Length: 399
Image 1 (cartoon, rainbow, N blue to C red):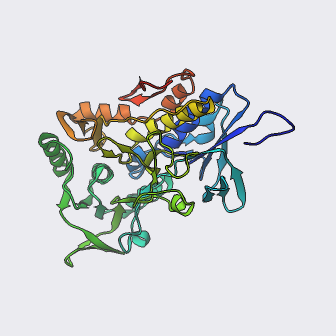
Image 2: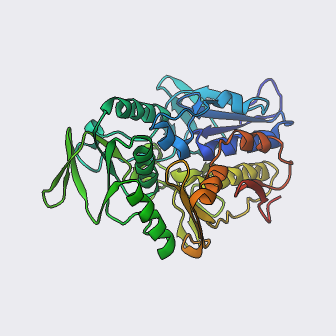
Image 3: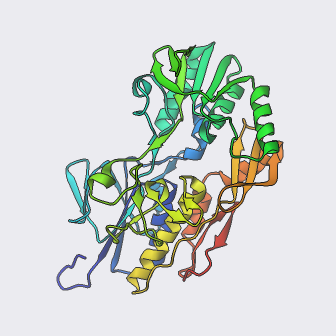
């Protein structure tokens, strides 16, 4: 903690990364300590623009979304914003280096430097494929698609991002041939009826789906599959696999095999308890296994970290984090979608939505977070809430 001229010590909370989880931490924490003079909240991010990762497939097809400013989202909360790239973390000295030339000290660190498309595992991806890591990446793809005329777009990866991107490209650019490649069938985790609807929608959009295959190399004008087959491609969008920054491992924090920070039940690093990990930067174990990175789980981790930090500042023990999945919404263009409702362990229920009803549902739960963060600023000082199905749900047992 820092002191100035005999004044009370100031507890410095530093939050790295302004994704869904990091922003939730910053706004919730700042709202809860706003009247305290002994707590300083600082949020660090590489750019001032907030990235709506859930809607980047729309940006990638030239659709205009409102640009949101992180300083504006923080306005009135009392939290400070520092723009810059995090280049090093020293977990023992409790310092973070920004752009190699600025040093920030902390007493509590919230690590929310989330995942990005893995462009290293397959040769050629880094040089020849587009990604949806940022709004700028999506805008580059949108520009390329607009200039392509006719041609073939290969989407590598049949997970949710790949499905939504392929559907959006096929709908917005019907003149293009879209090929979706992946190891698994699209919708593999859904119940049979929801999966069948999804696959029929891809067929209706004239998307060519190739499942059970592996891309081993991306070339300037094609992709090479295991076994030697090649598929011609004017554009390749890579959505297969994610990786996290190596900064946590280099800092000496205990990480899992994917580089995510291993946490205790309260989301604190098992090796450095003054460090909280949120979103897909964290390996968070629940009763059903380790959580996978989604906005659905990311925002609650941010809220829980904020509440836990306040509890610790008040001399109380943080509560364990408990989370169960609720749904998997997948857009299939602007007017179609499938929503698979799930058990808490993310296994599919029999209940699902399709068509325009599902599209409206999807739009509601993934709408701009600006109103959500605005309501977070006004949360009561006790208890904790997070968005759930478009509404705020109290986290039971948290005070």
